[in-house]
Every structure is written in C-alpha cells, then in structure tokens.
Length: 523
Image 1: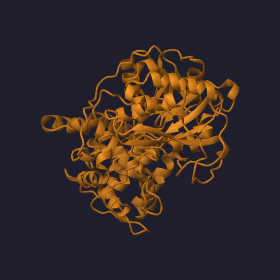
Image 2: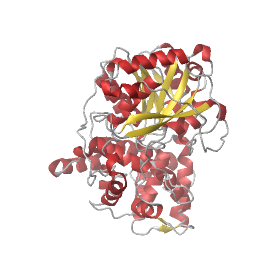
Image 3: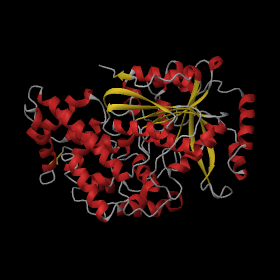
Image 4: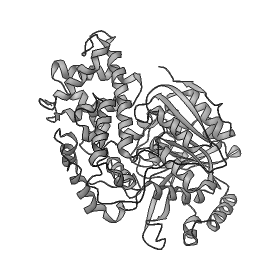
C-alpha cells in the first residue's frame, strides 16, 4: 500500500464511512458522574507506576466535535469528542505529552448501560474516531443499548500526532514505480525522520496499548471491553499480555499471529491473496465475455500476465497519470479485500484496460487502496502504517540465508501475485532503511486473563488468513474461536451470525460453543 494501510484492517462495514473529523452535537448522558469519578480514583491509585497517577486519574472533557460534514444515518447529537493526555515516553512521565483523539457514542439505553466498548478498526493507521463517528449503525442493537461505543486514534494516526511524510506528487511517483530497488524505502524513511524524529521512537503497539489502559481508566471502567479488527487484534493481544488483570471481554476479529515476523506475516498474506485472486479469476471464467477466457484453471495466469505486462507498457489514463503494473496490482488488491460482490466490477475494469487501453477504472481502485482522493491528496494512514509496523518489527528484517529462504517460500505460496515485485511483497512495509528500532520482537502471546476471549476467523480472508485465527486462539489458551465461512476481510461486517454471537459475548458473557461456524450475509 504505499505500503498498504488497508491491508491489515478496515472491515467492509466501516470502510465507506471514514470521515475527516468528528461531527458536532450533544452526546447523551454517558456514565454516571459519581460512578465514573470513583472508578477514576481507583484507577489512579492502581496505576502501574505512581508517576502515572495523574494520567490515570484524569477526567475526559467531552465536547461537541468539530469540522465534520453531516453524514446520512449519523446523528450528530449522539457523538462527543475529547482528548486524552498521555506521556510521549512512558519511561519519562514528566516529559513531553501527547493528546489522543477520542470519540464516544453514548449508550442508547442509559438504564441498561454496562460500560464502555473500545473499538479499533485496524491498519495500523486507521482512525478509531472515524470508525465510531461514521459507523454508529454498525453497533445498533444490544451493543449500542448497553455500551458507550468509544473509538480512539492510535499514535501517529488521525487526531493523535498524525504523520505525513511525502507530498502528493512525491507519493504518486513513489507508489506507482515499477523499478523498486533495495533503497526504495529510504526516501520515505528520510522524510519521516526529518519531520517526526522525536515522535517515531514512541509510536509502537506497546505504547498504544499503554494509552488504551489510560483511556480505560479515564472512561471509568475497571476492565477493558474491546472489539479489535485485523491489526486491532494485535493491539488486543498485546493488551492481554501487558495488563492481564484488567482484561474484560475482548473480541479479536481477523487475527494477526503475534508469533510471526512482518516477513512471515506477508508470506501468509500473499498466499491468502493468491487464493482470492484464483477464486476471482475462476468466477470470471464462468461468466460470459470474461477478459481472461473461459478456462478457470488458466484465467488467473492470464490476468497476472496482463497486470505484469504493464511494467513494459503502462497505460496513460484520461487524467494523464500512468496505470503502471504496481498501480494495477494495488487496484486488484483493493477489491480482493472485500467479498464476491466486487468481483464482477473488478473483471470489467481489467477488461477495459486489456481490450480498450482504458486504465481509468483500475487506477481508481488503486487510488482507493492507497487512500488518494480526487485532488491528489493522501490520507495520513499510509505513513502511520509504516511508522507503527517498523517500530514493532524493524529488527526482524531477514538477511542472508533467511532472506533467500523467505523469497523461496513467497514464490511457492504466491507465485502469481508476488512475481511482479517480490521485494515489495516481502518488505511491506519496507523497514530496511527505517531509522528507529525498538526491542519489540515477534513472539507468542499467552493470555493470563481469567476472562475467556473470543477470536473470529474467516475461511476466505485474504489479508489475515484463517490459520492465523487458529494459531492465535491456541496461543492465548483461554479463548474460543468463532468461524465465518466466506470471502472477505474480517467477519463482523460480513455476517449477521457473527454480529449476534459477538453481541451475546460482549453483553451477557455468553461464548459460542466450540466449533461454531457462521454463514456470510448474501446480497
């Protein structure tokens, strides 16, 4: 994705509702002030470090949100915004601070209110504030009745010290080039270091997890109740490791395996996208006038040959921009994140490029994938994706024999979708030139929480393959796996059965029986 911010997150249920800022309005009663004050005082006394008591004891000042357009189906009066004060460096609580952007939709039935449900839509780099702000209807029913729905922007994202390192023109060229060498990541790394050097040492997942615990206390909750999607499952897993005594009911949907390095995760992901590419092409071959022919076994290869061929002969679009091979593959990946509903449109877009030299539609898919708007501006999630992942895993970059072995496994498991530029697939994001290193290492996470956790995995998920959900469930130990049958990334946005099971767990503590499988929504 530029690296690929949406690859590790964004459920379809919220992808279309990301907004620029909070809407204004009233906001409901929220928690009882006396109860919240008592809980905050208790949290302050139990801060992990006495020097952090001031952060843990803070009260959030909820106000009308600013500068957001009204959106259909969104009630501005239901949303309030606040800033959470956290230390930039938890090892130096008296040093510089950050303001974390937070948004809340108050429980629809205050008399039934259980507490706060913290949500994260993944990425890393996607905005939890936007997910809550624009996705109120995603939580309608028992969740909205019983919980304040709360989203926050992790460090380097959205409204929390966002990072944006390259301008639009430089990013256009950087993203779409088909000649990526070993120093491809250096321009981004150098630009980020020059603009955000003091910040980038403190944007890793463990820093954000500590912010989540401060937020839990400021919300007045004794334990964290949480719904994390894609990369959000990694946040939830690390939270369970860091604060096992404060774990409430956690839902981890679209699992990342914390025991895998970035390179190993990418091999698994590209294998997942390879499977989805072949399923998409076989589906196309069964339709009339498929541009890849009528042989389901050969269709994917023909599609890949055309996409790869754009490196030699890119198409000029009506905007004057080029549809390169890198851009075309990004457009394909954008659609493969979703379910079968987008496949016919993707086939038509590739067909127009193949038969008429019209790359406009495929480039539009690429822009969606890369978060580029019609004015040529990019969202901030892209650089946050790189900054956070490299903070977590820059020391895991393979070299020597390990690198040769990784390339061999990538070629074996994703021969079509990775062959255009294997390095771009393996090094996603490209941390080889990243200037900051943390001690974080990929490792299995074992939950010592007394509360069982719920993991959701989808059999056709290309970005976080189903095996990850099985592996994470086994690592955590005290966890149950809920399976969704079907295509697309994450389960919550694709299945009423999953949403019902998640609500039963979060509201009543009722876990699905082991081995439960859910069908996907249709139509």
